[in-house]
Length: 464
Image (cartoon, one colour):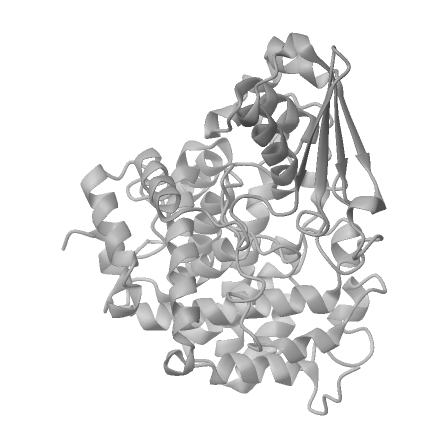
């Protein structure tokens, strides 16, 4: 255990208050700009999804106009509601970034920042500063509560994202140490979200809950609302209650040392589905690209994954597009048949495709500690990134083809290219209704975000 003497809550609050843009390593600033841009893109694309549509209908019922539905600034709604809408849109397609073991960090963090700032000028430097703080808090609290928390069925994006959003919102507010500690205490009583809701519209709403509750917690704390000021310390603290016996509070000693944006780094999503599907689908795509196999030639497709992979994949065979995002059988089958993955791969018509269903009947999935030698019981790391995934295609002629994938496409060890990042952003903005030239202008300006004086104005009018 750490020799921490001031208390874990004080340590987190001190980090949030004292972290300043001027002291951030240049590489951290550069790394922050990519997921910020990516998240703005997924906010736009989320408007075309059912979950996004329902979230917008809810906001509209409260008096919010339909124009600019992806922008979390200058809206006639309370900041916490705006944050909920933006974060739900960002996570609607399950296309937003991932911090393995910590869920989807940028959607709740960025949404909380934009909603807290509202129509007031927000510089790029202040945005990046608060974003880095939020991401760091999410990484370290996730690791401190331990991975058994996720294995128990909690959804970390929501349960830990609320602290990240509260930290980012408090940073934008300029909250002092005591206000931040109280915001964390309030956030702890708002932490919730169950994996049982994966494959439904409530899954992206978890991101919305995290953003909304984080903004609410920071706001209440700033007004003087009281809460425990040491929620991570002493009897019945957050880690003890939510950690399921796997808590490791000493992980909080890693706040900013190094920054999460550098290690382990954020993974950008290549496919609009659960990250647990990625490595297995990548393996199938690699085999099909190297030497295509026809469905008539396939006798069996056996996929071996690390223990814990299938826990959150609650749909063995989906009936809807939302459910398809959490079906490993479906992901493998559609990757095999199509030889590629697009947003359309997970539309509502996809699960009924006869060619995909025919291949699915020949798929065998097993969890095996053999492919996760460094953490066989999955106690300290995410099954979506730990160990490796093995796919074996057994053909009707008796031959076999094997692929092993250690890192999914989009992970820091296997990053998307600059062109892939740009193309994804433009495609997402196009879905959200932004004209091509404005999307291009916005993407270019996001590349030098630290120079912007008013991020809200840039989002509204990128060509100005």
